[in-house]
Figure 1 (cartoon, rainbow, N blue to C red):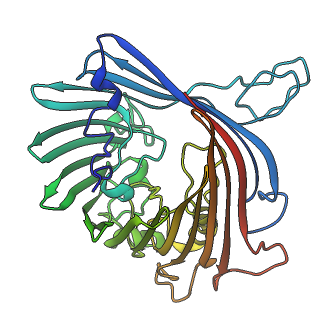
Figure 2 (cartoon, rainbow, N blue to C red):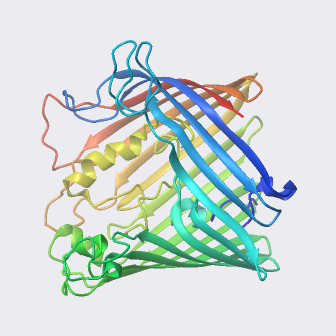
Figure 3 (tube, helix red, strand yellow):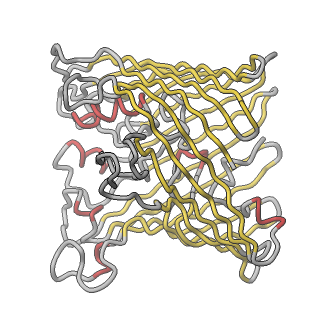
Length: 454
């Protein structure tokens, strides 16, 4: 059983390149990506919506590893150009959407977007990591970094097969000195939001496990506290999570089960549907499975998140490519998530991520065909509670959806892959949806791309 989901806190093990590091060594890698795509990612038509778009996208990502020794190193992941639309004649490459006349320079020359930047070392037998690092907890369901990073200080210590990790994540700093960023008369620390994490992971017999406790504290003038209708506006808010992930191989099938309990935000006045949800305790259960076939591999998943469950972050749990594409692709269109997020959530559906007030199932296979790899998947998802605010009537625009995706991939040279990807989602409208002639019956995304890794 792989420990990827256990050791994903950016992790608890050193980056692989450090194992052979010589003093003061610097390594660079990354990729260049180019793709052509067509998509319709909204469920209504019109000038304000993304209907039948056709364009080229590109990205240049670099990873730099600064290796002082096997134990001490720093790392940076930066995107020189990220999903920059390819356009213009005799024009400098830029992140800006402005189009310059031939021979001139477009406004905004683009910037080096630093996605992750952190260091790691060992001090007195304790592993130390600090900076904006990737963090993944409990199979990427409790917390997942996708392609970004968390500003954190992390300490870890191993005892045989057991590793204990403690982390302080600075979720939101706001003002760093002087007065609060929000309200006059309050200090700079009154607007902070912090997450404290304690996680234990290891192996018991044939079972890999991870147990995690999380405590998030939004101080009295933080955006987190101000976003809730509180019974006491001079007090902060807090929430707690407890998660357990178990993994094992049973009869040749890799099974990973995750359960999460969330206590609910404190000091909540319960005056609106959203605040009633925030106040209530909730839970999430998920199971992933994968195994080998005569030719290729198969995978499947199922999950249920109650209407009152609040995720730590808008987690990208990565249920399937239909839900969320690989973050290493430019121009990603996460159709299943987009369909629900732009309808159910904004119309009172009560979800801020794919892991709240939702349930879903899906399966896929990966089959070799000569030099090609073929990966189809099929998915179904639905809102868990159509009236999460207990208003007496359904409040969702979109109740459920089915969809799927197909990825064809081949290597055309060393380090160069060519991919053709397509995804499709068909929604079922909810009782709160007002039908009109501008409705789209489906969403789609098609992309052909090349990626050069170096």
